Structures are given as C-alpha cells and as structure tokens.
Length: 215
Ligand code: AMP
Image (tube, rainbow, N blue to C red; front, side, top):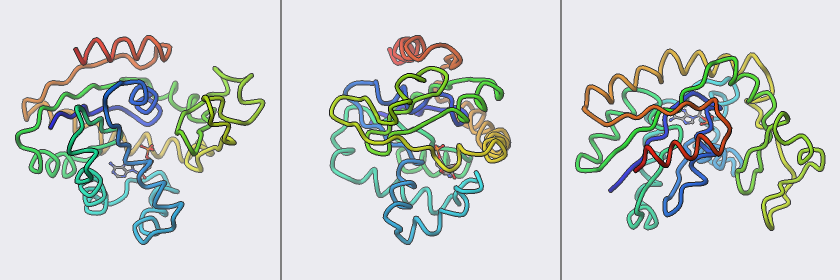
C-alpha cells in the first residue's frame, strides 16, 4: 500500500490539499470523528468531550477507528491513501508502522506559524457535505451567501465548534506542539522520507509544491 501522511498543525491546509490530489483516497480522522458525532454513535459519544476541548481523542479509540476505515474495500484497492490528521502521537505512529510494515510512506510536513493559524481558523467555515473550507478573509463574497458554491453542493456552511473560540484554537496548537510535532522526529528515526512545504502561501502555490514533493 502507498500512503501520504499530510502532517502539520490544525489549519495548515491539509484538507484543502488532500481534496485536490487526484487518484487518491483521503482519510481525515477529524472527519471520521465528526461523522460519528453526527450519528451519535458510541464512539462519537466517547470522542465528543475531547474534541470540544480541543484535546486529542485517546489513542486506542483513534487507532481502532482508522484501522476499521483502512479495511474497507476502497482502501484495499486505492492507488494512494492520504492520511490527514493521523498520526498525531507517537503511539499512533508506532501502531501504524506496525500494521503496514511493507507500505511505501511519504510524509509531507505543511509548516505554518501559530499566529497565521489562529487567524485562519477563527475565519474558517466548512461545508458539512463536501468538506470544502472557506475563509472570511479569502472568500468574503462567497460566504455572504452562506452556502457552499462547489458545483451541485449548495449546502449551508457551518463553523466547526472547535474553531469558534480562540481559547480552543490555542489549546489545539499547544497540543500540536507538545504531542504531535515530536512525531516528525520519530518518523525521521524510522528513516521515513519527510518533505517540508511552506503552508503560509496561497492554496494553489501550496498545492503545486505538494504535488512537486509527491513526484
Ligand atoms: P481535525 O479535523 O484534524 O482538526 O481534528 C479535530 C479533532 O478531532 C481534534 O482536535 C481531535 O480532538 C480529534 N482528532 C482528529 N484526529 C485525531 C488523532 N489522530 N488523534 C486524536 N484525536 C484526533
């Protein structure tokens, strides 16, 4: 199997990039959790409090959820699987590498400074259906209408609860620096290829550089 780990802080643009890479299946653990929340599944009920506080959902729950997703037939046949938001801790990375010892894995690290992220997330609106995100700075005219403009979508945009308060955003960033960023060092120790792309550029430039890094 072939994986692309899109690594980076919340709001780095991982989802935006993932959606634009052709012939790949993109799996965002945050989206999987949000689907569980919507369905009010048992897993969703367990994850809710952590997500609302901007904290990480415990590793055992996260790893089991991702494994189940990866066992589905579309993943078994995929040319490339993009992981957006996983691994976020060292135990997650360990479990992943143990499960796929033969996999070809490339990590692209989207690097963005904290203050840029706070601005982006405070202004972020998300389409709950197609998952496209909009930003009040970049897409003011579009957001005025309040609906997703992606072809045939037109779903009312929503603000993610964890994007609503600066305090929760700052907590997510703290968690990223404390628990997630060190995963890069772990992946490097495991001799995985890591390529850094500056994520503070316009979305089309970031996408072009990610595609270049993908080769
Ligand atoms: P995201 O959509 O990637 O920003 O994730 C939203 C929230 O889902 C995070 O703040 C965590 O509470 C939870 N989450 C997503 N991915 C993971 C993960 N790999 N490990 C633990 N929690 C996660």
